[in-house]
Image 1 (cartoon, protein in one colour):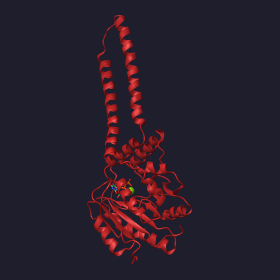
Image 2: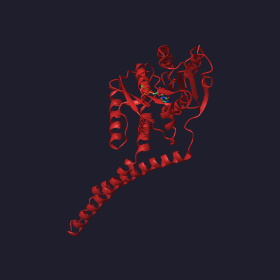
Image 3: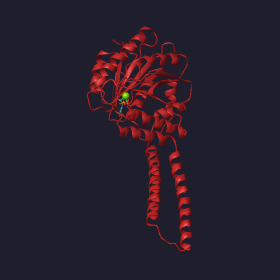
Image 4: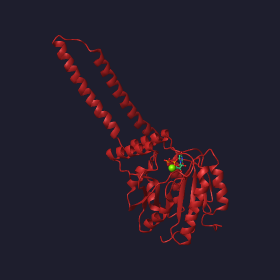
Length: 325
Ligand code: UDP
Ligand code: MG
């Protein structure tokens, strides 16, 4: 407990531009922590290459030959950030007392890792890194992120606002995470469900060190849709309620038209007819879409496909048997 074995898990997708600097800074940090006897000498960095198409894996290989802290895991294809992270966490938990996850672009302040470890030593099983503000984000990202967190909270999903995947988890918390067997693992929603003693550490998020975001709009939308449909049936309830209201409304309109007919002013409104057809048709389509979304979820859950497959690993099997230099 006093000198925990710490593994820092870093998912990487096409990150050759930042990886050199990231390795350097994380190595300095681990060296310092080790010299100060804060962490066990077996502590490591684990880079997970999420099927990169550039020279990311070659860089990790090269680093692992000269830097005793560097270990690597190569996924056989691009499995996505959450799955790459999960692959790293699952591997790391076997050789660590606690695992810290951080993005490769060093947007998160690595100096607060000290506070993470301090909180762990005080008995916390999960420590969340929370951004103080979002001023380094683009206006678009800020608005969409706020909207997303707000919506999730409204429909009863307890996310930690402004916390991404920068956190520490103890081996115990990770063992608990393994019990969530669903295929669509939305980590930011599931980890708070684990409970246990937790803490938050606040930090300022910087700009990306180099390269571009690996979360283009398409991936962001898919991520948000996954988050919502993995946790809540509120959208489907919303459709049911609006369907019910549409039916009530059409009955009222029907009655109104009937009264007019009886009274002899049967000027059948073509436009109102068209509007109702489009309205009802639209609602139905929307309903079918949301139902389809959930059926899709059931479909992927029952298949129980593995979430990722590991191609090779570096320096992982012999941890503990060899000196670092
Ligand atoms: N990432 C990944 N697989 C993907 C997309 C992203 O492993 O398919 C990694 C990426 O290399 C980075 C982290 O996930 O370490 C977060 O991505 P990014 O920094 O581009 O997201 P942003 O900070 O822009 O939201
Ligand atoms: Mg980033």
